[in-house]
Each structure stands twice: as C-alpha cells, then as structure tokens.
Image (tube, rainbow over all chains, first blue to last red; front, side, top):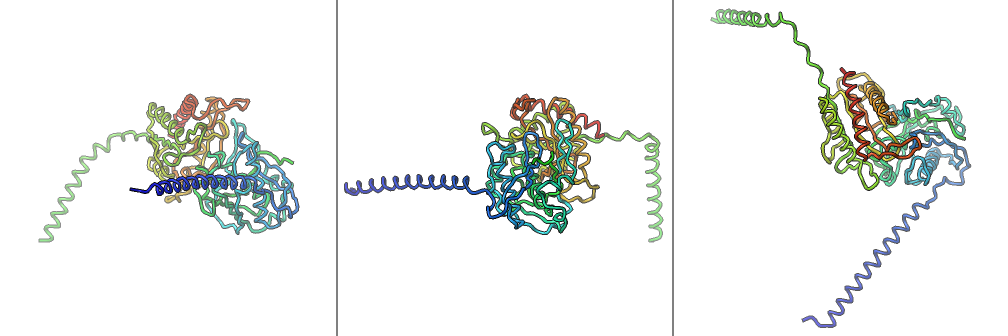
Length: 242
Length: 232
C-alpha cells in the first residue's frame, strides 16, 4: 500500500516534469525562430571598407531562359577570392529578392568561399554556355566574345593576360537543397555564376562547385556538379545594361 | 604404320572438303537474301523515381510521377506504331543515373529520351549534351561517352523541335551537362516539360494536365516516327 503523501508527491513531480518539458520545447522553438530570423537578416553586402566599384553581373531570367549583363555598384575588396565572393553574394541576393526573375532562396550567405587555383588542363571540361538559346525557333543574336570581355566595369585587357585560374565555389547545403528543381533553372544558376566570375575576374576560365565542402552529384537533381565548367564561354543573350 | 595413318587421314579430310563444297555450291549460286533492317529501338527514361522525387510542384505533386506518366503514355503510342521501346523504369523505383545509361547503352537504341518536368519557365525545353563532339573510340570514357553521339543527338533535337513546334508548342533548345545523358551511346535528348503559357504569359496548362501530357506525347511520338525514317 503506497502512502497517500507519496502518491501526491509522485503526481506533483510528474506534473512538474511535464511542465518543464513543455517550457523547454517552447524555448527551443523560440531559439530556432531567432536563429532563422538572424540568418535572414544577416549582412549581405560586401565589406564597406572596400571602395565601391562597378561590377558586371550576369543575371538569369526564367521567363525566356536568357542571361543578361547588369551593372551594379558594390564595394569590392582587392583580394580576388573575396572579390569573387562579393559579386556572387550580390548575384544571389538578386535571386533571393521577392520579385526576382530567377527566384532562388538563400542570398549572399549561400556562398561560403571561393577558392582560386591554377587552372589544370581538363579535356573533358564542359562549356558552361553550352546552351544556344532559340525561343520558338527565332535565333537569339548573341554578342560577340569581344563585346562581352570589354563590358564596362570589367578589368582592362592587361588583366586578361596571365595564367588561367580555376575557381572553386563552395555553396551551402541549404542553398542546394532549396534550389528549384529543373534542368533549365539549375543550368541558369550555374551559367550565371560562371559568367559573373569570368566577368569580374577574367583569368577565371574554369569553375567547379562544392556543397558544404564536399562534391555533390547535382545541384537539385539535374545540373551536374561533378564536372568542371568553362566560364569563358558564357555569353549573355543581350548587351550590358548600364 | 604412322605413314599409312597419315595418308588415311588426308584422304578422309579431302573427301569431307569435297562433300562440303558440293553442298554449299547450290547455296552460293542463289542470290543473297535481303539484309534484315536495323531494328529501331527507343529508350524512354522517366527521370527520378523512388527516393529521388525530383522537383516538387503545387499541391505537393512530384516530378517523378509526371515523368512516369508521360513515359507510359509515350510508350503506348510508340508500341502502337510498331516501335520497340525500352524503359528505364515502369514504376516508382529508384534507378541510379549510371544504371539508366547502362540500360540505354545495352539496348543499342537509335533514340534515347530522358523525360523531365519543371515548374519554372514555360513550354518545352530540349537539351542535348554539352560535350564537345568527338570521333568514336573503341573504349570511350564513361562520363564522356556521349561525345561521339552529340552530332546525331543535335539532329534528333532538331527533329523533336520541328514536331513540337508543329503541334503549336513553345520550344527552347539548349545544351546541358546531365549525368545520365553524358554517358549514353545513342542519340540522346533530355525533354523538360514546363507549364504552357499563352502570349500574355498566363499559364494555360501545368505539366500535370493530362491533356497537355497527351499533346506532348503525341508530338514526341510523331517526331520519333520521322526520326525512324531518317535514322535508317
């Protein structure tokens, strides 16, 4: 026979443990929401100590599958790796905007690092601009290569000379997981990243992708991320937009 | 004794040769039978499946279901026209991209279509491999096996484009690097079905629309019939 006071004590302890569990769960949820809110409001602009410069961004558009050159003023650090990350951050910020023509959630924080390495000779490299866009059989006139290379805001011809570089773009897993799935939309993201890197750093001729520091088969089920993409072949569908 | 046996063996061999010539001579005199026509096999690859759901559409619908539905519909249309069809999956099962390419390569097909669906963009997207065309080699690398077939894949893409345009659909041509596509040794094109839009950019049909799927399948079937005559 259990004494009555022990029954009362047991019931009280049970209620207390349940109440504490509920309180802990509530606190955990609040902390999680704070964390997500903090991520959304994370600073996305490049360091403001760097001088503001014009940068050419190759911005994708889902409606017609085109990639257009847009000029943007943003602080660009002198270090090439940080410079590459800053322009890609701006590009992904454009895609994360509510009215984006190529909506991709994530923003600037989706690019963790950009490593610049000497470019190896790769016979099986895939042209990033392998797409020759033809809408309704009407050929889109692509700009000649020279006009793309001399887009205002890009470094001078002297900077084009030098050993070619391989850029390794390390993306976050959440960016890849939340990227819209589809051949077209994934290719547009890959091509615009490759083209923007080449426009900012003309020595970057090859681009590889990592996700959370690891190789991943595809971006969101389609675009092959195990290959090396040739960045120099990305040609915008239209001229530069001042 | 050994010399006698050798002579005996020579006599037996000679008579056997004469008998063989006597039996084959009438056959050689006859005209050769017509060579059998190269079999026309089409591989339909319903992308994704099983754990790989592909894209997620409105109302929680999945790309893997649409691709399978179009594959089944297209297979029926082609089979009704006497075309041999090999599919990479007939149900909601996981098939690795390498396995898909293996199935296509073993089938020795004259056309391979990888079927996809997406919610972004509009119309039909056709993608051939973005590999640089290369001469065929005896032992091609697995990841670039399609390089020797890119030229024919581009021709197949053109035939598909014409048929889809004739069916009144908006078509965008492109080149893409897709794991399953780049490892196939046949004319291969990825077909991605996006929502259909009118001139005012209003969506008139989603990829899950049965009527839209039927029109796409009919156009692809017509294209493959034309490709059969071109491929022979």
